[in-house]
Amino acid sequence: MRRIYLAILLMGGCLPMPAQTAQAVPPAKTDKPAITRQMLEQRLAELKAGKEQAVANVNAFEGAIQECSHWLDLLEPQKPKAEPKPASNPAIEGAGKKEE
Image (cartoon, rainbow, N blue to C red):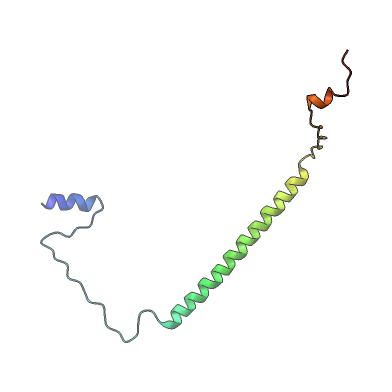
């Protein structure tokens, strides 16, 4: 049985040995909570500032992409627009001609 536990432990598992029973240690009691209102408000302010910076970065990237696209459009050779040909209709084309 110990070989199985040893093999599992070596493969990355974490099973305790049957003879060893782990006892949970209760956390130390303190009057002060681990997370205070002030800590949460400070973290919220940091997150909001980070969000504003991220939005500003996205806007800057969008502007740079738009500018590059604009300059690329100007650099491409302008293709002359072909004159549209009138629609050909054999019945109309033959109407003005005399049959020989």
